[in-house]
Image (cartoon, rainbow over all chains, first blue to last red; front, side, top):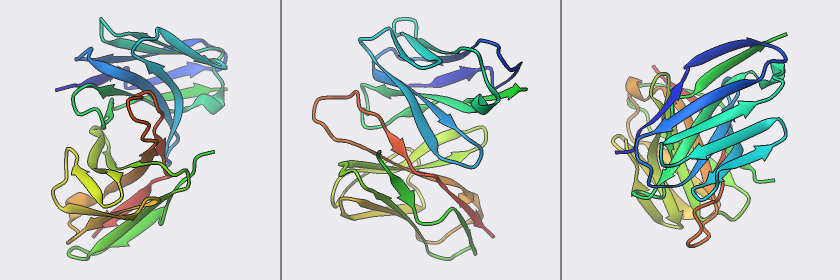
Length: 113
Length: 116
């Protein structure tokens, strides 16, 4: 059974720092991996989707990488801002039960001014 | 932009009541999903639907049912609400392009349900 883990569970940084969020998954048989952002009490917003054949994707100050063979992904946030404060979730689409996404429990990020 | 809307942001119900949560998407997506989100447990899939009148159980279907009579609308039904169903409920949709598993899943704003 596919399991997704995110470490750390919470992270607090001063504004302007570059930071890395980690996501690991137990089964490398995936179609893609997606990073989401969730603001308190709100739904999820898709940030980046990486296909299994890709190594990374970039959008603005965000860069996500995927190492499928080792079961790892990272989300890099450059020059963090207070508006980046949110919970970040990663999710994989496994080959088995491919309709579903399997989510990690998230990293809660606080960027202080 | 894809829009997924949910009928209520907050809902308070009594134990034993029948509860309907509605979700509507405006992008003609084939696939729709219901999740619940609880602290420490993350998002767990309750049910999903890949076409009108079609449904499949997710990881935690017990105590829930669903209905999809129209492509744009997917309803989650709690037949007899219980306190352990107090949670945040999130609806999502995704296009159903055959053979292309690269598409993004879009989420609604969520419904915070409290069962007293």
